[in-house]
Amino acid sequence: MYQASNPISSEDFKAYYKLRFDVLRKPWNQPLGSEIDKDEDTSHHAFIKHNNEVLAVCRMQLNSPEIAQLRFMAVDPKMQGKGLGKIIIQFLEEKSNQIGAEKMILHARENAVRFYKSCGYSIIEKSYLLFDEIQHYLMEKKL
Ligand SMILES: CC(C)(COP(=O)(O)OP(=O)(O)OC[C@H]1O[C@@H](n2cnc3c(N)ncnc32)[C@H](O)[C@@H]1OP(=O)(O)O)[C@@H](O)C(=O)NCCC(=O)NCCS
Image 1 (cartoon, rainbow, N blue to C red):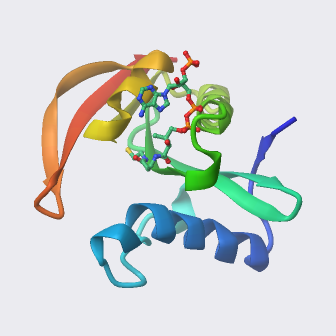
Image 2: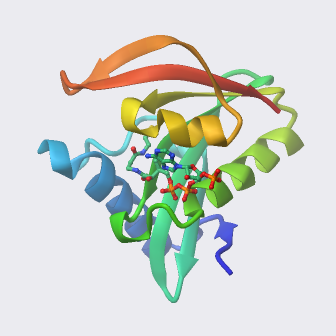
């Protein structure tokens, strides 16, 4: 019933970045704009839009021709635990595969490690601490 696709219109992108901000930045009192980085134009963006509402977002970037990375994964809190995260990750894994990537990596927030494990990712090492409190773990999966 839910399907991932690519945001296209400026309206789509506005809602896409808003969900990213609301889920991944606002709860830590980060300023508007902190949800966007220098690699947006060269990355692949995916979202789940349903009844004109953006419910889940994620971004994939190519770090090298073989290595893709997922970033900014966020599901609307009222829709978490309903399979949307898994749908959007599969969509971006397929896209990465099509363009020749052999491995997907990501830095998982501690609260999301079990989610990524259930999507087939393994922990490689403890990585950075975001906003002085959110521990991240480098994880990877062969595509
Ligand atoms: C983490 C997050 C992306 C997961 O997306 P979701 O849509 O809620 O997850 P899904 O419903 O697709 O879950 C897929 C699987 O992961 C499991 N899972 C999801 N969240 C989990 C959690 N917190 N703990 C344990 N398992 C979890 C589900 O049980 C499900 O397992 P199954 O396929 O074996 O039944 C989402 O909850 C979220 O946006 N959280 C807040 C922001 C965040 O932490 N983003 C990640 C940044 S790295």
